[in-house]
Image: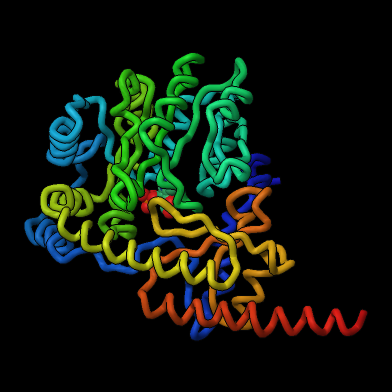
Length: 394
Ligand SMILES: Cc1ncc(COP(=O)(O)O)c(C=O)c1O
């Protein structure tokens, strides 16, 4: 067989698989892919255009444009009084996606275990396996999708190397308060484990101040902090993110990055400088709009009888569809076919989530209103009619 066993065994992303179905269908409202519906703010696009005009068309340092690393350094210093050296503690990556891959490849020896609270972002498990590690999933359904310290402690053993903590989370939108993070940190410190934090949605936290894990006392040396520009600045297509962490880990990540990627596209790095220096106003505007949509979608789902906890951040809701009697794939496929609304089956984020679907509200308010009307139609007409028919047959 020409394909490696490891790759052969890995399932394709549940999100992508489903959205191949959507492509080519007409009049579909897609609440599926986790991507801002906004275009990158003009000043950031202009910085990219200007970089091209000025002829910034060559490679940058493998670690990333020095100017960008310096801005990140200053940013973290000013905001949190944390010192991340631009030379060896910051690496610019092709989105958080590459950063996740690099950090896992940099730390995993065959058979090492990585703890992943579920439901989780789709890449953590497969990338852990590709790196030769063993993902250890923790089901968080019973604790409102939050990782509890005792549940964390229960799965730790001698082969455990790290925890991946994503908050605000994809697909649930849950986040952690400082107090909750401190409790998790206590357990990680007790067993000398690394915390890989994916805080790509940190700017989109609605009800309380986001606490960066690295700002907890003593956390800096045990944390690799991953972040990016895709969500906050609506820059998904620019493919840019970064990792900050202890020197030996960042250097190991840089070694892999220099052979596989070389460097992130130069114009994206120039645009990211502008985002950090002059992008705040746009972030706040987009955040206000996401918040407005969140209120609408949570209220609508409640009215329709789909139980759903209020997301504290990001732009997803993860309602239970148990009351419909359908599994998540049936629900998503039928909603798409009968009402032309695309959502993602819960099983894309973990095998225990067949009673849930993920709905993204990174879509215009008008689209959301129309989508909710269609979901109401689906629930009240199609499903109720069916139930009625079944009852009559019996
Ligand atoms: C939690 C999480 N991490 C990482 C990523 C990847 O982001 P990037 O575009 O920076 O690669 C996503 C994208 O959806 C995400 O939801």
